Image (tube, rainbow over all chains, first blue to last red; front, side, top):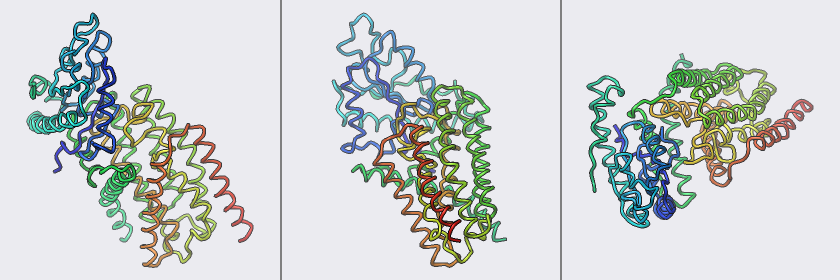
Length: 166
Length: 287
Protein backbone atom coordinates (compact mmCIF):
# COMPACT_ATOMS: atom_id res chain seq x y z
CA UNK A 1 0.00 0.00 0.00
CA UNK A 2 1.35 3.38 -0.99
CA UNK A 3 2.02 5.83 1.81
CA UNK A 4 -0.09 8.95 2.11
CA UNK A 5 3.05 11.07 2.34
CA UNK A 6 3.50 10.59 -1.40
CA UNK A 7 0.51 12.78 -2.05
CA UNK A 8 0.48 15.92 0.12
CA UNK A 9 -1.87 18.59 -1.18
CA UNK A 10 -1.26 22.13 0.00
CA UNK A 11 -3.64 24.89 0.86
CA UNK A 12 -1.90 28.25 0.82
CA UNK A 13 -3.50 31.15 2.64
CA UNK A 14 -2.10 34.67 2.70
CA UNK A 15 -2.83 36.26 6.09
CA UNK A 16 -1.67 39.85 6.34
CA UNK A 17 1.56 39.11 4.54
CA UNK A 18 3.58 41.69 2.58
CA UNK A 19 3.47 39.11 -0.29
CA UNK A 20 7.20 38.42 0.01
CA UNK A 21 6.63 34.95 1.42
CA UNK A 22 3.78 34.26 -1.03
CA UNK A 23 6.05 34.91 -3.96
CA UNK A 24 8.58 32.51 -2.44
CA UNK A 25 5.87 29.86 -1.91
CA UNK A 26 4.95 30.16 -5.57
CA UNK A 27 8.63 30.07 -6.49
CA UNK A 28 8.84 26.66 -4.84
CA UNK A 29 6.31 25.40 -7.39
CA UNK A 30 8.15 26.76 -10.44
CA UNK A 31 10.33 24.57 -12.69
CA UNK A 32 13.47 25.56 -10.74
CA UNK A 33 12.36 23.88 -7.49
CA UNK A 34 9.42 21.81 -8.80
CA UNK A 35 7.60 20.72 -5.64
CA UNK A 36 5.30 18.51 -7.74
CA UNK A 37 8.03 15.87 -7.95
CA UNK A 38 7.15 15.04 -4.32
CA UNK A 39 3.49 14.80 -5.32
CA UNK A 40 2.77 18.25 -3.90
CA UNK A 41 -0.23 19.98 -5.41
CA UNK A 42 -1.16 23.54 -4.57
CA UNK A 43 -4.92 23.29 -4.29
CA UNK A 44 -7.21 26.20 -3.50
CA UNK A 45 -9.78 24.00 -1.81
CA UNK A 46 -9.62 23.29 1.96
CA UNK A 47 -11.86 20.20 1.53
CA UNK A 48 -9.10 18.59 -0.54
CA UNK A 49 -6.04 19.85 1.33
CA UNK A 50 -3.70 18.00 3.69
CA UNK A 51 -1.19 20.68 4.59
CA UNK A 52 -2.26 24.19 5.51
CA UNK A 53 0.45 26.67 4.65
CA UNK A 54 -0.06 30.11 6.10
CA UNK A 55 1.94 33.26 5.43
CA UNK A 56 1.66 36.58 7.22
CA UNK A 57 0.40 37.44 10.69
CA UNK A 58 -3.13 37.06 12.02
CA UNK A 59 -5.19 40.23 12.27
CA UNK A 60 -8.67 40.80 13.64
CA UNK A 61 -10.22 40.40 10.20
CA UNK A 62 -8.62 37.18 9.03
CA UNK A 63 -8.65 35.31 12.35
CA UNK A 64 -12.13 33.89 11.63
CA UNK A 65 -11.18 33.01 8.06
CA UNK A 66 -8.12 31.07 9.16
CA UNK A 67 -10.13 29.16 11.78
CA UNK A 68 -12.80 28.40 9.18
CA UNK A 69 -10.25 27.09 6.65
CA UNK A 70 -8.63 24.93 9.32
CA UNK A 71 -11.98 23.44 10.34
CA UNK A 72 -12.94 22.67 6.75
CA UNK A 73 -9.84 20.54 6.22
CA UNK A 74 -10.43 16.82 6.79
CA UNK A 75 -8.12 14.96 9.19
CA UNK A 76 -5.25 14.10 9.20
CA UNK A 77 -3.86 17.57 8.60
CA UNK A 78 -0.69 19.57 9.28
CA UNK A 79 -0.20 23.32 9.62
CA UNK A 80 2.95 25.09 8.43
CA UNK A 81 3.63 28.74 9.27
CA UNK A 82 5.87 30.26 6.62
CA UNK A 83 7.88 33.38 7.36
CA UNK A 84 8.52 35.22 10.57
CA UNK A 85 5.15 37.03 10.47
CA UNK A 86 3.23 33.75 10.45
CA UNK A 87 5.52 32.41 13.19
CA UNK A 88 5.34 35.30 15.66
CA UNK A 89 3.77 38.35 14.04
CA UNK A 90 7.18 39.64 12.91
CA UNK A 91 7.69 43.34 12.43
CA UNK A 92 3.93 43.87 12.63
CA UNK A 93 3.72 42.24 16.05
CA UNK A 94 2.93 45.42 17.96
CA UNK A 95 0.42 46.82 15.46
CA UNK A 96 -3.02 47.56 16.91
CA UNK A 97 -4.77 45.05 14.63
CA UNK A 98 -2.32 42.14 14.79
CA UNK A 99 -3.14 39.24 17.11
CA UNK A 100 0.22 37.52 16.55
CA UNK A 101 1.41 34.50 14.61
CA UNK A 102 -0.77 31.80 13.11
CA UNK A 103 -0.58 29.88 16.39
CA UNK A 104 -2.71 32.52 18.06
CA UNK A 105 -5.81 31.03 16.39
CA UNK A 106 -4.93 27.51 15.19
CA UNK A 107 -2.36 24.89 16.31
CA UNK A 108 0.81 25.23 14.22
CA UNK A 109 3.12 22.23 13.70
CA UNK A 110 6.02 23.48 11.62
CA UNK A 111 7.58 26.94 11.77
CA UNK A 112 9.59 28.08 8.74
CA UNK A 113 11.64 31.16 9.64
CA UNK A 114 12.89 33.90 7.33
CA UNK A 115 11.87 37.28 5.98
CA UNK A 116 11.04 36.37 3.33
CA UNK A 117 11.41 32.61 3.82
CA UNK A 118 13.59 31.14 1.08
CA UNK A 119 12.12 28.51 -1.27
CA UNK A 120 14.70 25.99 0.02
CA UNK A 121 13.54 26.61 3.59
CA UNK A 122 9.89 26.31 2.51
CA UNK A 123 10.49 23.00 0.75
CA UNK A 124 12.41 21.83 3.82
CA UNK A 125 9.43 22.77 5.99
CA UNK A 126 7.05 20.98 3.65
CA UNK A 127 9.20 17.83 3.72
CA UNK A 128 9.05 17.91 7.55
CA UNK A 129 5.29 18.50 7.35
CA UNK A 130 4.93 15.53 5.01
CA UNK A 131 6.64 13.23 7.52
CA UNK A 132 4.32 14.47 10.24
CA UNK A 133 1.36 14.00 7.91
CA UNK A 134 2.35 10.34 7.43
CA UNK A 135 2.71 9.83 11.17
CA UNK A 136 -0.72 11.33 11.84
CA UNK A 137 -2.30 9.37 9.04
CA UNK A 138 -0.99 6.15 10.62
CA UNK A 139 -2.43 7.19 13.99
CA UNK A 140 -5.68 8.12 12.26
CA UNK A 141 -5.85 4.72 10.52
CA UNK A 142 -5.30 2.96 13.84
CA UNK A 143 -8.11 4.95 15.48
CA UNK A 144 -10.43 4.33 12.54
CA UNK A 145 -9.75 0.62 12.82
CA UNK A 146 -10.60 0.70 16.55
CA UNK A 147 -13.57 3.03 16.23
CA UNK A 148 -15.01 1.51 13.09
CA UNK A 149 -15.61 4.80 11.30
CA UNK A 150 -13.52 7.93 10.79
CA UNK A 151 -15.91 10.27 12.60
CA UNK A 152 -15.65 8.26 15.80
CA UNK A 153 -11.96 9.01 15.90
CA UNK A 154 -12.59 12.72 15.55
CA UNK A 155 -12.27 13.79 19.17
CA UNK A 156 -9.86 11.09 20.18
CA UNK A 157 -7.09 12.17 17.79
CA UNK A 158 -4.55 14.03 19.79
CA UNK A 159 -2.92 15.40 16.65
CA UNK A 160 -3.96 18.99 17.26
CA UNK A 161 -2.38 19.18 20.65
CA UNK A 162 1.17 18.31 19.77
CA UNK A 163 3.42 21.01 18.50
CA UNK A 164 6.69 19.79 17.12
CA UNK A 165 9.65 21.14 15.22
CA UNK A 166 10.06 24.55 16.79
CA UNK B 1 -19.04 -15.43 -23.42
CA UNK B 2 -16.67 -13.04 -25.15
CA UNK B 3 -18.89 -10.19 -24.05
CA UNK B 4 -18.62 -11.21 -20.39
CA UNK B 5 -14.83 -11.40 -20.64
CA UNK B 6 -14.69 -7.97 -22.31
CA UNK B 7 -16.86 -6.43 -19.60
CA UNK B 8 -14.84 -8.00 -16.78
CA UNK B 9 -11.62 -6.84 -18.45
CA UNK B 10 -13.03 -3.32 -18.73
CA UNK B 11 -14.13 -3.21 -15.09
CA UNK B 12 -10.75 -4.45 -13.81
CA UNK B 13 -8.32 -2.90 -16.29
CA UNK B 14 -9.95 0.47 -17.06
CA UNK B 15 -9.01 2.15 -13.75
CA UNK B 16 -5.45 0.83 -14.10
CA UNK B 17 -5.09 2.03 -17.70
CA UNK B 18 -6.90 5.29 -16.92
CA UNK B 19 -4.68 5.96 -13.91
CA UNK B 20 -1.51 5.17 -15.86
CA UNK B 21 -2.64 7.45 -18.70
CA UNK B 22 -3.20 10.27 -16.21
CA UNK B 23 0.19 9.62 -14.63
CA UNK B 24 1.75 9.78 -18.07
CA UNK B 25 -0.24 12.94 -18.73
CA UNK B 26 1.15 14.65 -15.62
CA UNK B 27 4.68 13.48 -16.38
CA UNK B 28 4.58 14.66 -20.00
CA UNK B 29 2.96 17.97 -18.96
CA UNK B 30 5.76 18.50 -16.44
CA UNK B 31 8.41 17.78 -19.08
CA UNK B 32 6.72 20.26 -21.41
CA UNK B 33 7.14 22.86 -18.66
CA UNK B 34 10.75 21.74 -18.11
CA UNK B 35 9.99 20.22 -14.73
CA UNK B 36 10.83 16.75 -13.42
CA UNK B 37 7.22 15.98 -12.62
CA UNK B 38 5.55 13.53 -10.25
CA UNK B 39 6.11 9.74 -10.44
CA UNK B 40 4.09 7.77 -12.97
CA UNK B 41 1.97 6.19 -10.23
CA UNK B 42 1.10 9.55 -8.64
CA UNK B 43 -2.65 9.41 -9.50
CA UNK B 44 -2.90 6.09 -7.61
CA UNK B 45 -1.10 7.57 -4.58
CA UNK B 46 -3.58 10.46 -4.65
CA UNK B 47 -6.62 8.18 -4.74
CA UNK B 48 -5.27 5.93 -1.97
CA UNK B 49 -4.66 8.98 0.20
CA UNK B 50 -8.13 10.36 -0.52
CA UNK B 51 -9.69 7.05 0.53
CA UNK B 52 -7.90 7.27 3.89
CA UNK B 53 -8.96 10.80 4.82
CA UNK B 54 -11.74 11.82 7.16
CA UNK B 55 -15.06 12.07 5.34
CA UNK B 56 -16.67 15.50 5.50
CA UNK B 57 -19.73 15.96 3.31
CA UNK B 58 -22.00 18.97 3.16
CA UNK B 59 -24.94 16.83 2.08
CA UNK B 60 -25.06 13.01 2.29
CA UNK B 61 -27.00 13.01 -0.98
CA UNK B 62 -23.79 14.06 -2.71
CA UNK B 63 -22.29 10.61 -2.08
CA UNK B 64 -25.41 9.00 -3.56
CA UNK B 65 -25.24 11.19 -6.68
CA UNK B 66 -21.54 10.45 -7.12
CA UNK B 67 -22.03 6.70 -6.73
CA UNK B 68 -24.80 6.92 -9.36
CA UNK B 69 -22.39 8.81 -11.62
CA UNK B 70 -19.82 6.08 -11.08
CA UNK B 71 -22.28 3.21 -11.66
CA UNK B 72 -23.72 4.76 -14.83
CA UNK B 73 -20.26 5.43 -16.24
CA UNK B 74 -19.34 1.82 -15.50
CA UNK B 75 -22.50 0.77 -17.35
CA UNK B 76 -21.62 3.00 -20.32
CA UNK B 77 -18.16 1.49 -20.71
CA UNK B 78 -19.39 -2.04 -20.10
CA UNK B 79 -22.08 -1.69 -22.78
CA UNK B 80 -19.51 -0.26 -25.17
CA UNK B 81 -16.95 -3.01 -24.66
CA UNK B 82 -19.69 -5.66 -24.71
CA UNK B 83 -20.38 -4.44 -28.25
CA UNK B 84 -23.88 -3.05 -27.69
CA UNK B 85 -25.65 -0.04 -29.19
CA UNK B 86 -23.36 3.01 -29.39
CA UNK B 87 -26.28 5.45 -29.20
CA UNK B 88 -27.38 3.86 -25.94
CA UNK B 89 -23.82 4.18 -24.58
CA UNK B 90 -23.83 7.92 -25.18
CA UNK B 91 -27.31 8.36 -23.72
CA UNK B 92 -26.28 6.58 -20.53
CA UNK B 93 -23.13 8.72 -20.44
CA UNK B 94 -25.28 11.87 -20.55
CA UNK B 95 -27.32 10.52 -17.64
CA UNK B 96 -24.09 9.93 -15.72
CA UNK B 97 -23.01 13.52 -16.41
CA UNK B 98 -26.37 14.73 -15.11
CA UNK B 99 -25.75 12.93 -11.82
CA UNK B 100 -22.39 14.68 -11.62
CA UNK B 101 -24.25 17.97 -12.03
CA UNK B 102 -26.55 17.00 -9.14
CA UNK B 103 -23.58 16.02 -6.98
CA UNK B 104 -22.17 19.52 -7.43
CA UNK B 105 -25.32 21.66 -7.02
CA UNK B 106 -26.59 19.67 -4.05
CA UNK B 107 -23.92 21.26 -1.84
CA UNK B 108 -25.37 24.72 -2.68
CA UNK B 109 -21.84 26.10 -2.64
CA UNK B 110 -21.60 29.09 -5.02
CA UNK B 111 -18.37 27.84 -6.60
CA UNK B 112 -19.68 24.31 -7.12
CA UNK B 113 -22.92 25.71 -8.54
CA UNK B 114 -21.13 27.92 -11.05
CA UNK B 115 -18.97 24.94 -11.99
CA UNK B 116 -22.06 22.75 -12.38
CA UNK B 117 -23.78 25.29 -14.62
CA UNK B 118 -20.67 25.42 -16.77
CA UNK B 119 -20.74 21.61 -16.89
CA UNK B 120 -24.24 21.81 -18.39
CA UNK B 121 -23.00 24.24 -21.04
CA UNK B 122 -20.14 21.84 -21.75
CA UNK B 123 -22.65 19.04 -22.23
CA UNK B 124 -24.52 21.24 -24.71
CA UNK B 125 -21.23 21.91 -26.48
CA UNK B 126 -20.14 18.30 -26.96
CA UNK B 127 -23.46 16.53 -27.40
CA UNK B 128 -24.02 17.42 -31.13
CA UNK B 129 -20.60 16.10 -32.16
CA UNK B 130 -21.15 12.90 -30.17
CA UNK B 131 -24.55 12.24 -31.75
CA UNK B 132 -23.29 13.12 -35.24
CA UNK B 133 -20.45 10.59 -34.81
CA UNK B 134 -23.06 7.91 -34.15
CA UNK B 135 -24.90 8.99 -37.30
CA UNK B 136 -21.63 8.79 -39.22
CA UNK B 137 -20.99 5.24 -38.03
CA UNK B 138 -24.53 4.31 -39.04
CA UNK B 139 -24.15 5.73 -42.54
CA UNK B 140 -20.98 3.73 -43.17
CA UNK B 141 -21.83 0.48 -41.42
CA UNK B 142 -25.61 0.45 -41.49
CA UNK B 143 -25.72 -0.36 -37.78
CA UNK B 144 -25.33 1.26 -34.37
CA UNK B 145 -23.98 -1.97 -32.89
CA UNK B 146 -20.42 -1.44 -31.57
CA UNK B 147 -19.43 -5.06 -32.10
CA UNK B 148 -20.45 -5.01 -35.76
CA UNK B 149 -18.82 -1.60 -36.35
CA UNK B 150 -15.53 -2.75 -34.79
CA UNK B 151 -15.29 -6.07 -36.61
CA UNK B 152 -16.60 -5.04 -40.02
CA UNK B 153 -14.17 -4.87 -42.96
CA UNK B 154 -14.25 -1.08 -43.44
CA UNK B 155 -11.88 1.34 -41.72
CA UNK B 156 -14.35 4.03 -40.73
CA UNK B 157 -11.90 6.92 -40.44
CA UNK B 158 -11.32 6.88 -44.23
CA UNK B 159 -14.96 7.84 -44.73
CA UNK B 160 -15.36 9.85 -41.53
CA UNK B 161 -12.35 12.20 -41.24
CA UNK B 162 -14.59 15.20 -40.49
CA UNK B 163 -16.42 13.29 -37.76
CA UNK B 164 -13.08 12.24 -36.28
CA UNK B 165 -11.87 15.86 -36.15
CA UNK B 166 -15.12 16.94 -34.48
CA UNK B 167 -14.87 14.09 -31.96
CA UNK B 168 -11.25 14.85 -31.08
CA UNK B 169 -12.24 18.50 -30.67
CA UNK B 170 -15.00 17.73 -28.17
CA UNK B 171 -12.69 15.21 -26.47
CA UNK B 172 -10.81 18.25 -25.17
CA UNK B 173 -14.04 19.34 -23.45
CA UNK B 174 -14.84 15.86 -22.19
CA UNK B 175 -11.34 15.30 -20.80
CA UNK B 176 -11.37 18.71 -19.09
CA UNK B 177 -8.29 19.90 -20.94
CA UNK B 178 -7.14 23.47 -20.96
CA UNK B 179 -8.99 25.74 -23.33
CA UNK B 180 -12.25 24.13 -22.22
CA UNK B 181 -11.63 23.19 -18.57
CA UNK B 182 -14.22 25.69 -17.41
CA UNK B 183 -16.29 23.54 -15.05
CA UNK B 184 -13.37 21.97 -13.19
CA UNK B 185 -9.69 21.77 -13.92
CA UNK B 186 -6.90 19.29 -13.30
CA UNK B 187 -4.61 22.23 -12.75
CA UNK B 188 -4.19 23.53 -9.27
CA UNK B 189 -6.11 26.78 -9.38
CA UNK B 190 -9.16 28.07 -11.08
CA UNK B 191 -11.09 31.33 -10.82
CA UNK B 192 -13.90 29.35 -9.13
CA UNK B 193 -11.63 27.40 -6.72
CA UNK B 194 -12.12 23.84 -7.99
CA UNK B 195 -15.45 24.44 -9.73
CA UNK B 196 -17.57 21.31 -9.88
CA UNK B 197 -15.42 19.45 -7.33
CA UNK B 198 -15.09 22.27 -4.78
CA UNK B 199 -17.28 20.54 -2.19
CA UNK B 200 -15.93 17.06 -2.83
CA UNK B 201 -13.25 15.78 -0.50
CA UNK B 202 -11.80 12.48 0.66
CA UNK B 203 -13.73 9.42 -0.64
CA UNK B 204 -16.10 11.42 -2.80
CA UNK B 205 -13.23 12.99 -4.73
CA UNK B 206 -11.67 9.53 -5.07
CA UNK B 207 -14.92 8.26 -6.63
CA UNK B 208 -14.93 11.21 -9.02
CA UNK B 209 -11.30 10.54 -9.97
CA UNK B 210 -11.78 6.82 -10.62
CA UNK B 211 -14.95 7.51 -12.63
CA UNK B 212 -12.96 9.89 -14.82
CA UNK B 213 -10.49 7.08 -15.52
CA UNK B 214 -13.33 4.79 -16.58
CA UNK B 215 -14.71 7.60 -18.74
CA UNK B 216 -11.36 8.29 -20.39
CA UNK B 217 -10.87 4.64 -21.27
CA UNK B 218 -14.37 4.57 -22.78
CA UNK B 219 -13.67 7.72 -24.84
CA UNK B 220 -10.37 6.27 -26.01
CA UNK B 221 -12.33 3.19 -27.03
CA UNK B 222 -14.53 5.37 -29.24
CA UNK B 223 -11.40 6.83 -30.84
CA UNK B 224 -10.25 3.25 -31.46
CA UNK B 225 -13.62 2.44 -33.03
CA UNK B 226 -12.84 4.92 -35.82
CA UNK B 227 -9.75 2.85 -36.73
CA UNK B 228 -10.86 -0.73 -36.09
CA UNK B 229 -11.54 -2.94 -39.13
CA UNK B 230 -11.40 -6.40 -37.62
CA UNK B 231 -7.78 -7.36 -38.37
CA UNK B 232 -5.17 -7.98 -35.66
CA UNK B 233 -2.54 -5.55 -36.98
CA UNK B 234 -5.23 -2.92 -37.00
CA UNK B 235 -5.50 -3.09 -33.20
CA UNK B 236 -1.88 -1.90 -32.94
CA UNK B 237 -2.64 1.01 -35.26
CA UNK B 238 -5.70 1.83 -33.14
CA UNK B 239 -3.58 1.90 -29.96
CA UNK B 240 -1.02 4.15 -31.66
CA UNK B 241 -3.76 6.53 -32.82
CA UNK B 242 -5.23 6.58 -29.31
CA UNK B 243 -1.84 7.44 -27.78
CA UNK B 244 -1.24 10.14 -30.41
CA UNK B 245 -4.67 11.62 -29.72
CA UNK B 246 -3.92 11.64 -25.99
CA UNK B 247 -0.60 13.35 -26.65
CA UNK B 248 -2.35 15.94 -28.81
CA UNK B 249 -4.74 16.64 -25.93
CA UNK B 250 -1.81 17.12 -23.53
CA UNK B 251 -0.14 19.46 -26.03
CA UNK B 252 -3.32 21.53 -26.41
CA UNK B 253 -3.71 21.55 -22.63
CA UNK B 254 -0.25 22.99 -22.11
CA UNK B 255 -0.29 25.56 -24.88
CA UNK B 256 -3.64 27.26 -24.45
CA UNK B 257 -5.39 29.43 -21.89
CA UNK B 258 -8.88 28.86 -20.52
CA UNK B 259 -11.73 30.07 -22.71
CA UNK B 260 -15.09 31.57 -21.77
CA UNK B 261 -18.01 29.15 -21.88
CA UNK B 262 -19.92 31.03 -24.60
CA UNK B 263 -16.82 31.08 -26.79
CA UNK B 264 -16.43 27.36 -26.18
CA UNK B 265 -20.03 26.74 -27.20
CA UNK B 266 -19.72 28.75 -30.42
CA UNK B 267 -16.37 27.19 -31.32
CA UNK B 268 -17.35 23.59 -30.66
CA UNK B 269 -20.66 23.92 -32.50
CA UNK B 270 -18.85 25.70 -35.33
CA UNK B 271 -16.25 22.96 -35.66
CA UNK B 272 -18.91 20.25 -35.37
CA UNK B 273 -21.11 21.85 -38.01
CA UNK B 274 -18.25 22.59 -40.32
CA UNK B 275 -16.20 19.39 -40.24
CA UNK B 276 -18.79 16.77 -39.31
CA UNK B 277 -21.56 18.55 -41.23
CA UNK B 278 -19.57 18.82 -44.45
CA UNK B 279 -18.45 15.21 -44.07
CA UNK B 280 -22.08 14.20 -43.61
CA UNK B 281 -23.18 16.10 -46.72
CA UNK B 282 -20.44 14.52 -48.82
CA UNK B 283 -21.37 11.05 -47.56
CA UNK B 284 -25.05 11.60 -48.32
CA UNK B 285 -24.34 12.93 -51.83
CA UNK B 286 -21.64 10.45 -52.87
CA UNK B 287 -23.09 7.22 -51.54
